[in-house]
Image 1 (tube, rainbow, N blue to C red):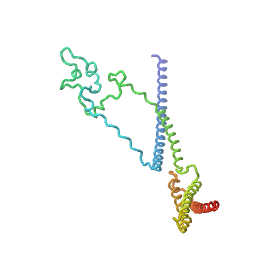
Image 2 (tube, helix red, strand yellow):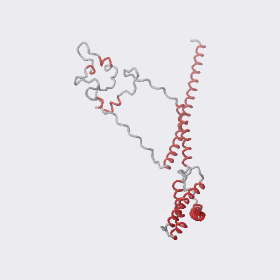
Image 3 (cartoon, rainbow, N blue to C red):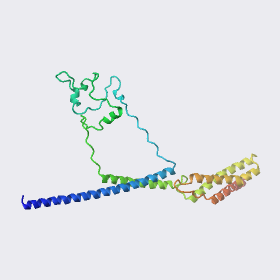
Image 4 (cartoon, rainbow, N blue to C red):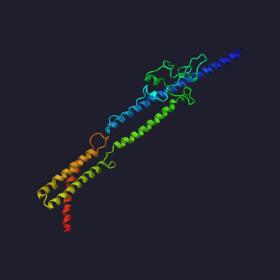
Length: 295
């Protein structure tokens, strides 16, 4: 070997060495980036899990429903079947237990080819009996379409970067749905698009209107002599307005409170008291004016 050839070979080896170092450095950087992305994604998933737990507690779900139990696998004796059926056996190993050896009629010396050649003979067993758990573990998990007990080709290894990108997109989608759930949880079940003040006015006015209907019924009962004047006045001035006020207070506390709002939302007690104690007497006055107008 001449000096020029030796120098060219040395340069080639040096270039290959530098290329290997660069490839190793790039692979190390790629793995560091993948580990950093995995750590960040793990933190996001942990935060999402905690937030989902908070949402579950807010709506009254402490734990997710338990998954249904898987049906038990067949026992060792179930593979035999009933008389007249063919028993299912695992595929024999290669070699002495191959399909050709199992179906051969026998050798020239009069000896059978194997246990498969004489399935009815007692005491002959080419395949040892295993317990149920070990038998299930010994069964092949995947075979090729051509049969023969040859394992199927494994799927190609997934790209970690692509898998992390898909996981990141799913995490973004989960964040978006979580924000929508939080927005919905911040709205009460009763009149969710209304403001708290408008909701309180509507609730107290509705309870006052219901009490006004009861006032009209009491007035009609008083007209036929079922209710005396003192009882009618007491219910109109104090009883029914108080019932309407406490009814609106309870309705706002039960259906007017958002699930995710800390504390108690305002119920506007002075406004509710004023509305209820005005609507009921006004309903009675409107009834009197209507009766006098008709006369």
